[in-house]
Length: 328
Image (cartoon, rainbow, N blue to C red; front, side):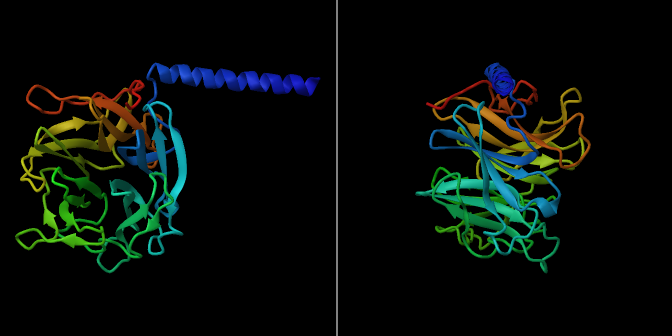
């Protein structure tokens, strides 16, 4: 009888916890959006689900896999463990960073950085893996890095795959305060030179550090990036607007940064645009106020708005986060 009572009380306790969490989420109080240390999140929509692909935030030697998260409504998230790890990528040994994903045909292509190379003599760079469903499992597409060298001073990290409205796919990437754009070939096995013969075209704007992202709105190209140092409180996001994916990009201003009352180091973001709605979300990482370790980063979502001239309004980071928004 005593054991049955303990089981009953345990069940009541679990029900209470789940109910409290559900009520909190229904109010929209869901920043961070899921548990665990995760950074550099890429948000995207596949198969009527919201997806987030982040970096596992840990010491470099422990960054040997990537997890993914899916949600039907931006509030309730399901974890997909180890969609890829270094056992599937023989040349990658550590520092699997900043995944970017794009669908082409019936396949999903996952781009990632690995090994944090510091010179052309080291093995690593930007890789690409492929799967038949968003949650993987992903397998190395090439058996070697897609980009393994420094071009125009850009460290081969922080890749973002972008599909233009004309069907051309681009890879935008770069650390060490340099950013390149390159035209992906049909099979994502290499690149197509631009008309002027360049393969890796530098598009670095003022104050660029890392973490590029691009989207198109009203026939304008919005190019966004992270500024400051990722371990410090000055990490932030700025943007520029141009008529072409290759710019020129003139910095407009900063739109995401820390709030001393909420969190520090807000940066390395992505943007989700809801289909058939004029609604945009910014997905980013930040460091809780009670954390000092550089890897203590969490993934959050807040709304992003534009003014009447199409300029991005500064984003207010919140603890509340966003409300439930099931996809139609």
